[in-house]
Image 1 (cartoon, rainbow, N blue to C red):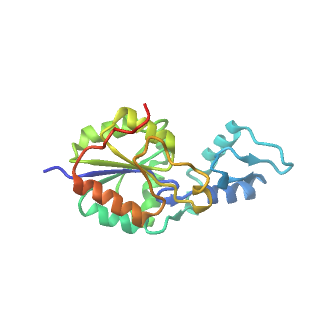
Image 2 (cartoon, helix red, strand yellow; image 1 turned 135 degrees about the vertical axis):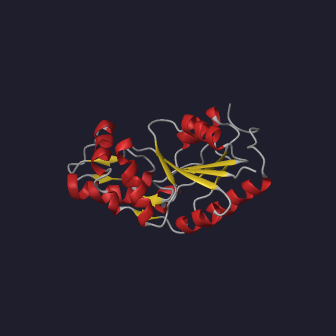
Image 3 (cartoon, rainbow, N blue to C red; image 1 turned 90 degrees about the horizontal axis):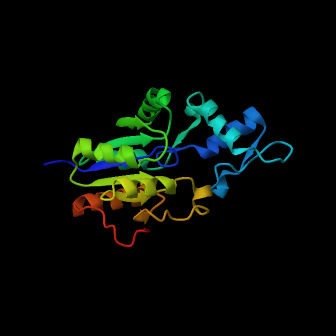
Length: 212
């Protein structure tokens, strides 16, 4: 009998990122990142002028992997994954370049999280579909903080249950529920229970009520 499968994002799901990225940008570039707005490009220079989105994304390549040690564990995340791993396979699907994969594995292991890590660029629907085909799970749950990835998974792997989780409290209240997710839960105790219940139900995701 095949096991269930959990496919889980990392940044702002398992590890806090934006608050530490903001601190680093202030220290390194004298810029202010208003991450609590929920916008990744809400960045201003020291003179108050807005920073172009391209420059903001370029700074990510400075932060990863050199500054990854700044990141901290989301409360109850490691404990939830340990409990889920007793009955399911787990893959961490993270949108980082391939050159960051070993760094992410080491980083997660330092927090007691030792599961397969896959890096990705762009939408996560295709890699989720490939993982489902590879594992042949009885049921699959996908967890991510970004609505765009829930939409991508809904398109390419509609039978997968999709949980929207934004772990940064200062940002979560400004981020609306992802339209293509089946549920929104921002803490790992609640998320663990929701995931385990999907496994227990052993049914594919219900596509009714999802946006066209």
